[in-house]
Each structure stands twice: as C-alpha cells, then as structure tokens.
Image 1 (cartoon, rainbow over the protein chains, first blue to last red):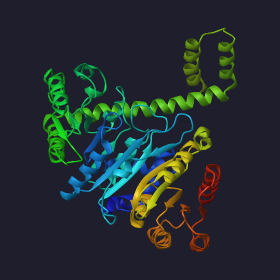
Image 2: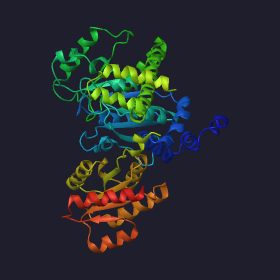
Image 3: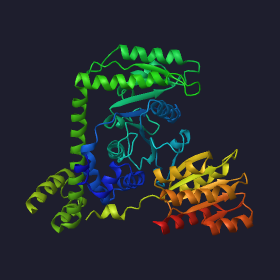
Image 4: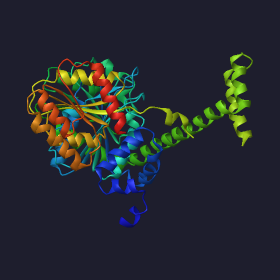
Length: 322
Length: 140
C-alpha cells in the first residue's frame, strides 16, 4: 500500500493516512468546486467502493438524525468506524442554511472512529447536495468502515440518494397518511428497508401493516423484498434489527449480482452527467464568445430562427470550429 | 477558464455552539437564524457542548468561524480552553467570537486571550452579522 500511496497527491496521501484536517479541507474544496480538489478526487476514486453507503431518507421530522446517532452508537459498539454526511437544505433566497443534524450526535470527544460532516444542499434538488457522492467516496477512501448519508427531509420525489447509497432506508412515522400514500410513485419505490420510527407512538402497527401490504404487492425486479423495521430512539428499540437488515441487504447485493448491476447503472449515469456538464459549459462558453454564434442568439431574439434550430447549429457550429 | 466557478462566492461556514451547562439557547438560535439569512451556512451544535466537542466539530466541519454563546458564567474556564485546544488541533487560524452574559472586565481579558469579538445583551443582529462576515473573510 505504501508503494502506491506515495504516487498520490499530498492531500490524497494525507487523507489515506488518516489526517482528518486534510479530509475536512478537501471536502470543503469539493463542495466549492475548487479546482484544487480535482486531482485528489480523481486519485482517490480507486480506493472507494469498499464501504457500504447507507442512506437514510424520509420526510422532515421523522427522526433521521436520531436514527443516525443510534446507528453510529451501534456500529461503534461493533468496533466499526463511521463516516457521516448530514445534508440540510440551503435557502433558495439567501443561499444560507442552518445545518442541525449534528445536535443529535452523541459520542466520546476523543473517539476518532467517527467523522461527521454537515452539508448544505446548495440548490440541488433530490435530497442531497451535488457534492455528496464525491464526499462519500472521500470518506470511503479515508478508510471508514461504513458511510451513513442522511438526506434533506424528503418530499415524494426526492430519490437522489438512490444514486449514492448501496442501501437506502426510507424512514416514516405513524400517521403519515393512509395506505394510498404508500402506493404513490417516488420515495416509496427506492426503499431497500422501511423503517417505522417512533414505534412508541400509537398507530405504529397500522403503519407497519400498510407497508407490509405494499411490499407484498412486490414489484422489485431484483427479487429483494424490503423488510419493515420498527424503531424508537427514545426507548432505543429496533436499532440492532435495523442494522442487521442493512447487512442482509448488502449480502443480497453481492450474492445476487445486484451490486455490480446497480454500480454500472449509477456510474453510467454519473459519467454521462459529468460529460453533459462539461459539454454544456463548453457550449455556453462558445455561445458567449464566438461572434458567429453570438449572432445566432440575435436571430432567435428577433424570431428569425427558433431555439431548436439554433441549438442544432450551435452543436454543429462547434464541431466545424475545431 | 471556468469563470463562473471562480466568480461564484462560496458561503461562509460558521459553527454556533453553547459550551458548558446553560439551560437555554434562544440567543444562539436567533444568531444562527440571522447568520443564515445573511447567506451563511450555520452548523448548529446546540447546548451543553464540551470544549473538546466544539473543537472537533469546528475541524471536521472545516468552518471559517466559531461563535460561542454562554450565560452560565463559566466563560473564563471554557473559552481559554477552547482556544488552547484549537491551537493544539490545527485550527489556530479559525476566529472565535462570543456572546452572552460576560462582564466587561472578563471580556477584556478574553479578548486579550484571543476571542476576536464579544457581544453583550442588546447588540443588534446587524452588528453581529457584519462582524462575523469580516472576521471570516479576513481569516480566509
């Protein structure tokens, strides 16, 4: 390992060797789109893909942060190290954010087996930030045994965690709605595990039954039937069971070949997305700077040509310009 | 050259924490909210934090600034401890400001020890925001 790590950029080597300050600073650089993080991110990719990435998602107030804290406690008692990312929303008006996932975290201050990072969504839709995936890879490369990602309090279509996590836990609470809610598309489709939190409250059995019916209807092409776990972080019940279900799902991913299939799909989406960003930036630059192409804009504004035709010319014109 | 990227301002990250055994955090929450509305990313660590927890949070979150709120009277014990730990753990350059019930004489000594600004009761939110911003920008 030392042989290969000596070829890494200094910051990457520091991260691999457990330098938490280097890790924290690199995460900031990735979040900020700072070009200084580019080489580090590229060079550490080969060291990721080792730790399970467990996503916790669900509406606001269902207890995701408390569950993260309980899982961290469980994992530490098992001797496992944990990297945590807690995402909270940025204001669409000021860009500001209050990141409050950390207040539930209880741990011994000298415990270096936990690294907790709060992230603002910074305008990204879907429940996570644009940088969350790469930051989870950094934590993975830094050697944490398990990565936990807590999403923004999610709405029905916030399913981006699916593109990051190997196991997605959808957290609900009693009285969130009737069983028709569970039939609706989106959030309920991405669960590898359903967690009914606050089972100490009345209505928990009904909530579990509604979910059980949903699962019984089937529909997962992989053949995995999401288990339904009742948890309470007040009485600390169900946490072991929840973690055991995560392990069971991770094993299923390996034994069924779903892990590779899922990874291929996710990575293909990621590569195309990155390439699209790249091409998009390049085309924007051309449209702004190339005088011939700028003329295109004038023509569209004057209603001489339509935006679709202009887009065709922009792409073709770009190629000719080479 | 990715002009858009460089021109885009990156938000100031600030940790707001209450060291020690205070019972309520209304003031800290009001300040957190004001900093949020000023476009900052506020990591709210909440009540009953030890100096060790605060310093660890500041370093993991890679904040530009730390704001401490205290009402209990234990500031002369807790603040210097936080400053010492920050230096030891590699967070020397992170400016720390404070608010709460801190007598003038203590405030003078704390400033000498390295607390960059201290806000007493009645300070306007605007003043806190302005000071926080300039402290963060100067350290960056």
